[in-house]
Image (tube, rainbow, N blue to C red):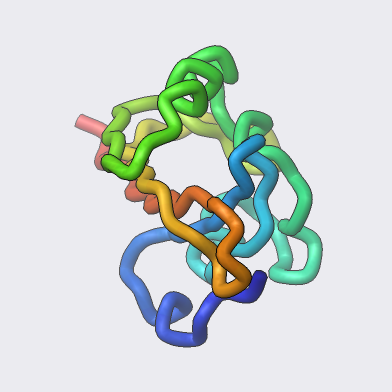
Length: 110
């Protein structure tokens, strides 16, 4: 799966995962936020970017067509944590395969 060029213009960090949570595509903002190059982000698990991976496991178990919104802590590739809001919803790839779309927005420190 490839990310549509329009998604690279989005204000949010966006990624697409398979139903197991493995990243199959991401936009430039996502890569920058987490310290990846576009060509190396695929096949990492989104769980590995969570500060507390068990939170993601709970969310992944609720696979549905509805969106989920979660305030959580994530971490970039170098291990630096940050608070964010993750919005997730189910969709299908162009091939008809179920996927999850994730939008991640960093929360400002108070």
